[in-house]
Image 1 (cartoon, rainbow, N blue to C red):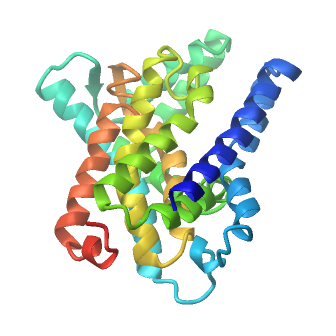
Image 2: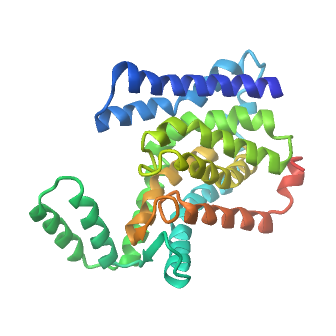
Image 3: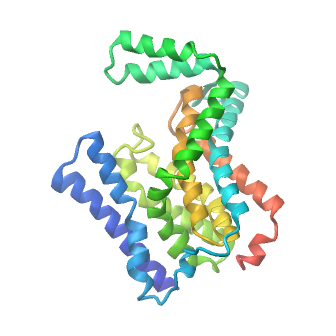
Length: 309
């Protein structure tokens, strides 16, 4: 299994990092649209590696979690709920650590329309939009007859829709590799080892994108370490829903929903840093650790059933 794991990782990293190298240095892609397309192709590396190695490794589609029957749909729903819980918990930790404990870097958090208007105003002012246009859009938002809590709920609903549709397709470009092939080759190495290894690998795989400004644009090097921290925290619920649902599709739903919902956190927090109070900062890591703890409390038999320790 170790040789298979190494070969899969070599191929997955090779495909994705080659896409980055060609886009960055050979073609010289610089436009936002170009980088969006390049990043989408980058995400397909793990799935491509899994598909290329499935037959040489003698694996069935079921081994990769690609099934049509026997799916436990309850856990598919739980996967989406975990993804939606991430920004809510991150907002909660930002408030606790920033407003209550007054720790620098977590900013000021408030689930209100005024906060949302102020944050969006700040973001729009940095895009080159005229002050008049910024004021007009801020006024439109302020005039909506709903409060901050309802706006947050609407954002979560929208994130669930995107996470289960468009984002799901691209997330499967990763998950067929991480929770498909890699899950199969490492699932009997022990719960702690499997989660730590998968989380570290998953985070490091993002390194070229992170260094180029993805998620932590002001921290190209330390952002890589924080990405590994975030992916490791997320790896436990990912493995959980993958096993309990009996398919890889649940991991795609969780991943897609996280990608759709992560940005919500920063819409209700001002003054937080990317590494601490950002959408995938320390507050989000703590949120996913809390989810992992709840899974261990309410489903304590899963590790032994999975033979992970």
